[in-house]
Amino acid sequence: MAIGLGIALYSRGNYDDAVKSLLRAADLRPADPICYFFLSKAYDSSPNQADEVIQSFRRFSELQPGNARAFYYYAMSLWKGRRAQDPSLDLHQIESLLRKAVTLDSKLAEAHLQLANLYSDQTQYAESISEYGKALDNKPDLADAHYRLGQAYVHTGQKDKAQEQFQVYQQLRAQHLADLDKQIADIRQFVSSEKDETPAKQ
Image 1 (cartoon, rainbow, N blue to C red):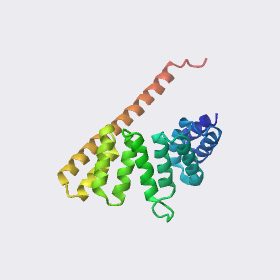
Image 2 (cartoon, rainbow, N blue to C red):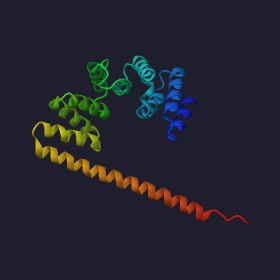
Image 3 (tube, helix red, strand yellow):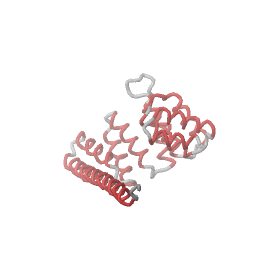
Image 4 (cartoon, helix red, strand yellow):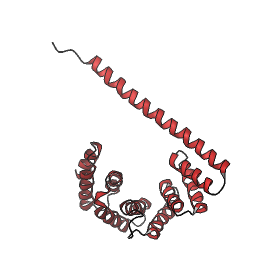
């Protein structure tokens, strides 16, 4: 019920309360991976309860040491909750957790992407290029990975490769926007058809 309430609150844009409800769910069932999946989504939109969320994800990684996503969630909670301006941010810990995640599951594209972003932010472009490549090997439609890989190529003087990645990014972005437009059009058509089929009140 706590998970369901958290999802309902999240869908209505009430992100702070969604996080609170999902944290309660995590306390009630600490090893439930479904809870942490939704908590990670809600936390993306509401980082205000960073300490509680970080501790929750830390506990999950301890309860499930063979779960790659547990370490990925823990790493991202630390990174989001304590950005670079925070002196307590330990980038080595975040790198270690992301490394653990991709070691447990080499096909976890999101972990490769964030590890690449971490390297890129530290101007370690050769390492970031390698990780962006691994992310795209597993999930070629990651638009952000193509864009960030293009930036890394620019920094390493590989302008032709950079341009190729930027072109792919633009294509994926255009497709994404077209898909959104289609979804909106489909919803409007559905609503319109429902109205047409609704009997008029006598």
